[in-house]
Length: 178
Image (cartoon, rainbow, N blue to C red; front, side):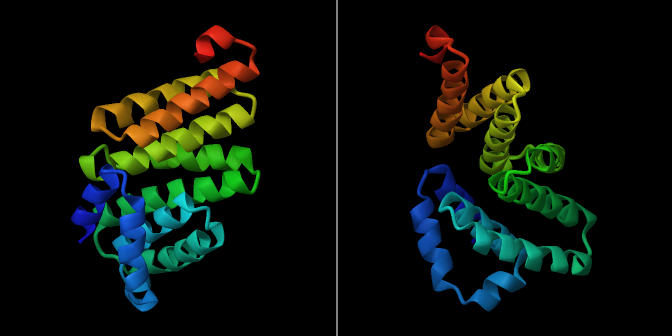
């Protein structure tokens, strides 16, 4: 199921995944770490930050019961990425940057995680920009654009390009923004 959801996400059909997840009982989602992660990402994409935060609290409580160190590391990377979005939304930019950098290291560079890695890179780039750190913002957003483009995730590629253009516009560099 998780592999199928990843394939659907690659195709840019997040609404299909949302529909599938909404049909599941909440107890099913809360008892399965991967479903909790996917559901939290869906909540983030829909701007439902409180629901994503609730799932993260539940998932963090479950981490100690997971026996596989590899699975724990991957889940910790996802938690850091999602927490970074939530923290940036709350305005704590230094913490959002730290969490996104943590996720950047912990999320495996695999096909299963390329969408989440790309979204984390965009979040990191935006957090850098909002913090006034434009060079790392542009570098990180360029990386997000490249990673998502190579994976064929055009919505994320366009999102990264848009954020890059916004930085150049804010700096008055109109030619670079185009």
